[in-house]
Amino acid sequence: MSYSDIMSTIATIIAFIAIPATYYNGVRVGRVNDKRKEFNAVAEPMLVILEEHIERLKSGRKPQVTSIVCGSLFPQEILSALRRRMPEKQVNEMDRRLNQYVESIAELNSGDSYDSAIKNASALIRLLRLR
View 1: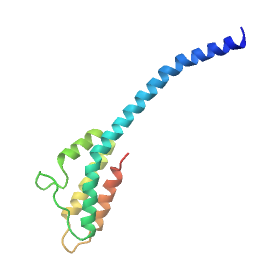
View 2: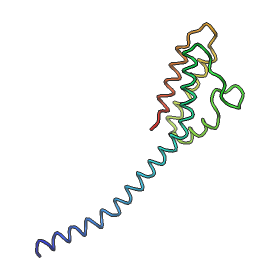
View 3: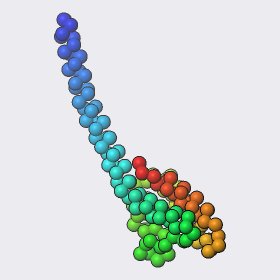
View 4: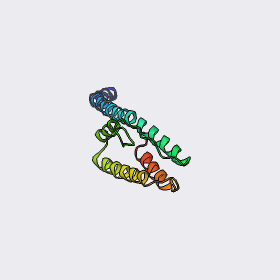
């Protein structure tokens, strides 16, 4: 067997392996990108709400209720959509931090320091950062 025959055989084998491997890798990367884009689309409104809350807290005012649901700081449809797109461990962490934030907002009086609420809102922003 000559050198060119060996090289053409090796190239053929590599092509038969590389084409399916490239297809599989492309599909996998596409799925990961789609999940990332979906999460970012759902997380963005929540991040905007939290940033508005932080600005209000820094200026010494309580955040306004942003949901149609009475007494809720965040729209329930956004929270539900986030929960569906996050792993269970992160959902538990988000719920814990969200409860801490809501409690810190509920405990605020006009003369209180808003540092705790700002800290809790910042922790939520770090948890929900865009991917």
